Amino acid sequence: REVDLSNNSLTRITGDDEPPVVLPSLIRLDLANNRLNKLPMRMEVPSLRHLIFAGNEIGEEFPDALIRECGKSLTTLDGQRNKLHRVPSLVGCKRLRVVDFGDNALIDVPQIGEDVIELNLVNNKLKSIGGLFAEMEQSPDFRSKLGELRLRGNKVESLDPAIVRCLTSVAFLDASMNNLKDLPSVLGYLPCLRRMPLEGNAIRSIRASLLTNTPALMKFLRGRDSAPPGDDYLAGPDPAGSAGGALTKVEVGQAKSLVNSALAGTFTLDLSGKELSNMPGALMAELTADCANGGGTVGGRVRRLVLARNSVEQLDFLAVLTGLTYLDAGQNNVRDLPDVLAKTPIVELRLARNQLSSRAIAGSPTCRVGDPVSTFATTLSTLDISGNGLEWLPGALSTLPNLSTLILANNNLTTLAAGTSDGEDSGWQKGYTSLETLNLAGNNISNLGDLPINLIECCPLLRNLSLANNELTLIPPELGVLDSLTSFDLTGNPQRGVRMDILCRRASDQLAYLRSRLGENDLQSLESKRKAASGTAPSGDVGEEADASSCSTQRIDELRRSIEDITLQLNNVYLTEAKKYALKKEMKMLK
Image (cartoon, rainbow, N blue to C red; front, side, top):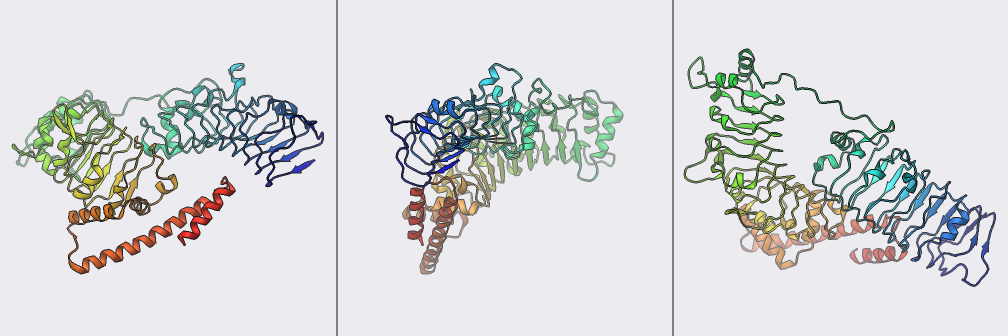
């Protein structure tokens, strides 16, 4: 009933000219971890339930005859860690529940039946999941019982909505480390989906924070499109009703009440979600009125304006808010920065998800520290222009002396190399001397230009840096010298030089790993530039001794981290014996 031939050095089971294997009562056949390069073409095993041939060298396609022979009884098929390029259709295996073809060379997904509950296809060469369910073509109401689908480490470019629509029982879908650019909205309606790892893709159309939060991501996807037909899916979002207190037409009493509330406490005028396309006339009249106790207009006393989630296109009305220090106009239709902004002492400006262009920012006098002096340029500390249409980085931003937080996520930036665009300086220029937070996530950046060197030389206060979800094929090791970083995110790039387990560690560990890839001379040169930027350049023998001690301690830490890396790799159950031996040998040398 059971034959266990695993962990030997078998190269074949039977020859082509030998009689077929006849085992009518065999239930389990384990051929794992041998040296087989093919499976027997002729086997009479009508009762076989569990076929295991993992860890061999089988490169030919899986024999169709074997599937036909045991198709009525087979429940487990484990062929991971081979060299398979193709697997025949498994639709006829009506009792099949678990299929594992991870770590092969498959270029097409195997066709499976509706009763398979686990499918592992990690680390293959798949570009699509089309054709996974052949029965779907005959029955438009086809639903799979698949509960786990693992696609990690392939080259999948899109998740076919027609296939996803059939996954009404899936609870775990691992699509990490692929080439996904977007996700179909039908994923948000799958009723059983609980976890969906997506790291290592280049998804630009969805915020990075959503990609790590499956429930929030599903809610977002449901908001994109209506539910597919059928009763097997989650309900769609409620129809959007009108925002309470819409101000497209404002009565004098309403305007007075809003303004009066802005003249106490934090002096905040909150107009968020009011369906505004411009500042209502009644409000403008209240803001331009003189204060009762003298001392300028009412608008001059407002310090904070929240205008988010409207349809505002122009911000010229800011001329009446002369004392404004905070402006949140996110999720509007703003296309330009008005000239009046230059006279406004704004410290924090949030214009996320508008329609700003690079030219609109670079050409605006508000971002220029010169003659005439821009009050805005000298006071601005936080600038959020994420989710706009920026195609190149305006060089003028580098001159803002007090800019500490710059958020450029989810734009269309492709390069940070310094140059000129539309007659304006573009790319990452030297400057940004006060910068503490830089977020460039969710762009299409493939070239960092001089960013690493300029951050070392000019930004000694930098604490947070995100380059996640871009198109970087190489991580510059120079970034490892930025030891002031407490938050560092490089995930979601197509690079393969730094392993994912390292990118998921704390910032100090990532920086140490990158430093270890620098030559000794390069490291010393970059360290000198960093210390010069922070005003802590060493002098005399004391400095040299300190450097020597620091280098010694650093080397010990690097060796320890390398040993930890190898220990983590040895815990991988998919490792071959040869790979385990090599890793253990490397660990001994490090120790």
